[in-house]
Amino acid sequence: MPFVEEYVDVAVVGAGHAGCEAALACARLGLETAVFTVSVDSIALMPCNPNIGGSSKGHLVRELDALGGEMGKVIDRTFIQSKMLNVSKGPAVHSLRAQADKAEYSRAMRMVLEETERLRIVQAEVTDILAKDGRVTGVRLYSGAVYHAKAVILCTGTYLKARCIYGDVSTYTGPNGLQAANHLTDSLKNLGIEMYRFKTGTPARIDGRTVDFSKMEEQLGDKRVVPFSFTTDPESVQIDQASCWLTYTNEKTHEIIRSNLDRSPLYSGAIEGTGPRYCPSIEDKVVRFSDKNRHQVFIEPEGRYTSEMYVGGMSSSLPEDVQHAMYHSVPGLEHARIVRNAYAIEYDCINPQQLYPTLEFRKIRGLFSGGQFNGSSGYEEAACQGLIAGINASMEILGKEQIIIDRSQGYIGVLIDDLVTKENHEPYRMMTSRAEYRLILRQDNADQRLTPVGYEVGLISEERYRKLQKKILQIKEEKERLERTMVGASGPVQSFLASYGSTTLKTAASLAEILRRPEMDYEKLAEIDPARPVLPPDVTEQVEIDVKYDGYIRRQLKQVEQFKKLEQKRIPEELDYDSIPSLRLEAVQKLKLCKPISIGQASRISGVSPADISVLLVYLEQKHRQE
Image (cartoon, rainbow, N blue to C red):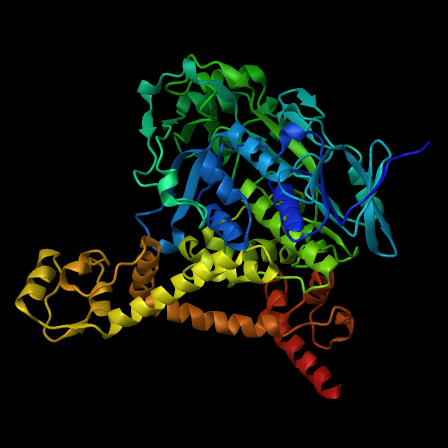
């Protein structure tokens, strides 16, 4: 029987958040790209929470944007509420979070894909990855059609052999009742790829017209909205925002859940997959945190043109009747009508230790992967991996060096390094605590850290790069001016300091020294700084942070120097760990499994001790001398 045969440079399997970024990166770098999805209507779908960003995740979106990704731009056009989180704490943990209009976000991203040259969208299920002599050659569809490709990027999300479950109800579908991809797993196993079975879940959706908001606390957005994208005009995002609402579970809710745990698939053994530790279901919360008499529940609109609302904090796989009882026990939800039941979803994904830090498979040249297929969770984590996989697949085809974002360059580097280096037996979620250099990896300076990388790759325009260079110069010059501008202990200066409860001067001090005082900020200094230049807000924000935290930043930069030295000590891929004297057996086993590319990566492998690293360093040095 004849079948369709097509030729492209890159085939992207899946059009979720990872697939969209991967496909856009490849097409924008000049490659003929096909992105395959089981449903065109599910492009950039948000099957769970209706928001982008959040603690640490906002950092990821900013970094994605700095590299030339699309997520930040699209959420800036489609958000309905925005809030900067953790503002009472230091700038290292400030993180942007926006409520999305789900339908509008998906529609806007789809339009971006449709309007991108060299990018075609194909609605079809990919059933086979084709490879020859250790190199990928294309994909085969369920119809039998073959797309020959120089690189393939797997971004299958939660669709591989997906099963949705609540109570005794089990349906073999993807999220939101969409078609699952049931054939690709077998093809991957035949290629020698190790698979995991993971699980995640989502709460019920309710009809907002049946909610009593008078029993809840209103949650408003920021008065002054900060955009995600460095290219978005801040004035364009100052819109009328939707409200979210906060309520709480109670002892009645918890009793309903405890009384029905035997009917929960999580506890009956009906669910085989491992769930995310840091995003537990409500039944998990009640069991694991039995000392708490209530848990937060956020009621969040799914969009401007729907009454459907998301019940944040109450994901579940309990039976339908139990769901009705427990949701109705929550203040404000007594008469809420459920539009969509909560459910858990099981799906196939890979052991990401099979990947290089470039997100290319070690065993199969030209095969890359990103997103939840790599064992992570979250839209933001997925999008970042998709972008890096897209960039590196393109670099591979174009004959250029692939990029690695390391742990000192960005949260993206932390995310990918954790995935490919550490043993992850549950869906990985990004957190600020995972980043050891978080003081310099702030969301406000992502452009300074990563836009030069995006420019070098080819995803950042000359105009945008020049604007960044101008910004960096302005920051440098203003910091230098503050350091050299001295003010004496004059009457006006002393009065100014006293008015803010600040210690008066005994001798002259620089404006930078005064700015470092906790009670001072850059705007306040204007009163005693008549010569200050007029600078953009994003420049003055950086100046203030850099000056105030100068000592801490310098200390962290020294730590980064040491880190870089270990990262630059490369380990040959063919190294025979069994032949290294004095290397402990556990270390040998872990190093053979992970195959680290550097001493730095080896030092982060669980089971490899500092003593093992010392042995490895001595051995490599001796080997180098012999050569």
